[in-house]
Amino acid sequence: MPEQPFLERILISEEQLAARVHELGRQISADYRGKQPLFVGILRGCILFYADLMKNISVDCTMDFMCLSSYAGTGSTGHVRTMLDLRESIKGRHVVIVEDIVDTGLTLDYLMQHLKDRGAASIEICCLLDKPSNRKAEVHPKYVGFTVENEFVIGYGLDYNELYRNLPYIGVFKKQ
Ligand code: 5GP
Image (tube, rainbow, N blue to C red; front, side, top):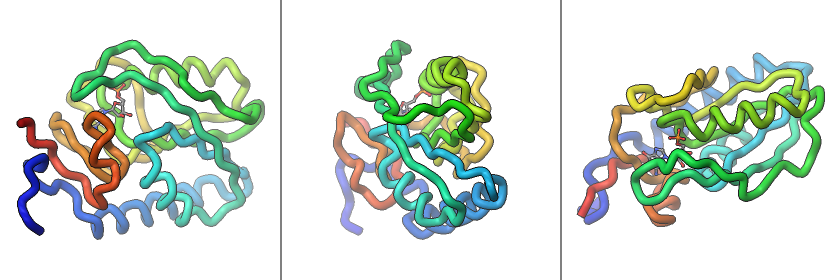
């Protein structure tokens, strides 16, 4: 691949992503047999991960989405806003939140508080990437694709100022 000015290096290849997402799908399907889970994708970072994960889910399930905003550029603002809410009630449902990356944990901490009041039977988090070294809130994802260092990553749904979501791999962003 020719050198890309925005890319420090590829961290997780397309093949590694596909293999791990396949495993996660199998694990979640086994855990939720007979429970008809609701997969809540957190837009927009989840898009590629969500689509690939769903293709590996073998139990009956439903899908819904939320859009939260907390980031500007490469830094978390700490203020989370709900830009788009769920369409369906989650009362009595087994909810799996599908998120691109857990960094400070502030976004998911806000979301968990918000959803717990709505009467779900259970709520678990499935994130593609986990950056535990940067945690500021108590958030414990049950399903984690890869644990990464404290570097700003792009690709496979993750952006830098809305660019690079379409890259098929996860790369480390090169600051200009
Ligand atoms: P948190 O609230 O856990 O700090 O951050 C959650 C959101 O920040 C993620 O869903 C993601 O959109 C964004 N984010 C955190 N770390 C990164 C990163 O390394 N790269 C990109 N592109 N977004 C990130």
